[in-house]
Length: 301
Image 1: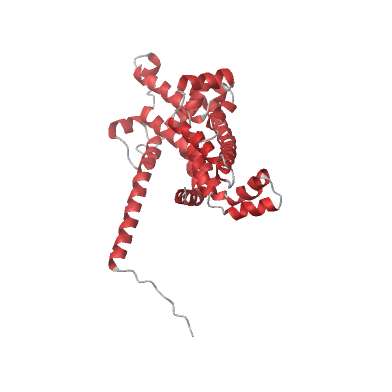
Image 2: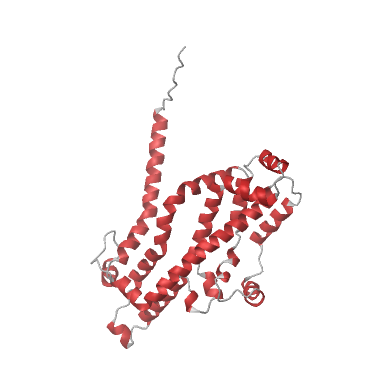
């Protein structure tokens, strides 16, 4: 006897609702894309055209003057800042993911009686902190993190939100897997690296993306802990360049600023393009893991 295929027939109201959702999501995506297109267009426009006519989707009087102005100021330093940012982002992400996954494993593994205490200790740091001055004294005087790449990585070694997200994901792993591994004689290190890590690739990629964005966009740690130009990150260097351009515009009566018009608005857009370029290139490759990890981590808590 042949099995009948059941074809789900959508009602008229369901079709209208689906069309409405697709339309809403498409419009929302265009709204998010619109500022990026404006920034890209303005970075290739002249400062006078942007000042006179405002921003547009198509570059006004297309030119590379803004990028030429920025690269002519500190070209070697920008390349060095790119290298520093990439190094800090890669190393910081690897270290933070390992530390976060280890802590999440400790408070999620079955049989550990102090798991709630460790979870509360981590959660307590989300509610209270010692303040900026004690943090600065601790980092510089006791840990010696100033003027080093270590100082740009260690303070962000674990984000509590990412840790709880990873913990929720690890709780989806059946307890029988842990029991089978222990019966076979595996210790906690073997269980973590040989079983938990391979089974948690989606969750690891999710928090890795969070950490990578945090390290890439951060300029607070360089501002607080660095005093040498050769360790500047890209974000911090762009911040300082923007401050210098703002100073030239404010003091436009001096002889140098009277001969050269500093590209204030277009420089901001060019800096945005330089800063978000690598993120835009990497994000499409990890988007599927990011969405899946968020959904799984949010289902079970």
